[in-house]
Length: 107
Image (cartoon, rainbow, N blue to C red; front, side, top):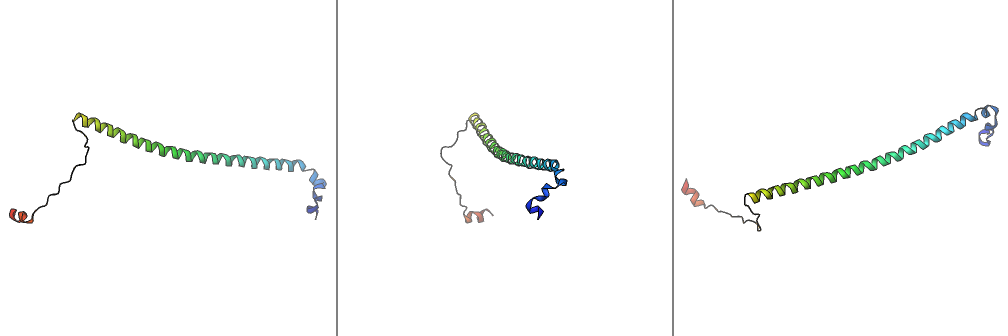
């Protein structure tokens, strides 16, 4: 019942140790605050990691496009040197049917 009423705080033994209780309370507050700071830093680091992954993928995509453009320009230069011109229309596919009578005659 003393605990509910708070009478235990008025005892002489407890009054002698108030400074230790306040010190422990202060340490707890410092620990809670530092934990809060650590959590915010972790969230910030995770955001930065996500951004770096996004930038890495963008960089890889840009490099692949750059390599493709370089290859096309180099092929274009080689075609001009060999006096080749790119086609404006698609080539036609020729189908040749082999007659079965010609196959027997050659044997």
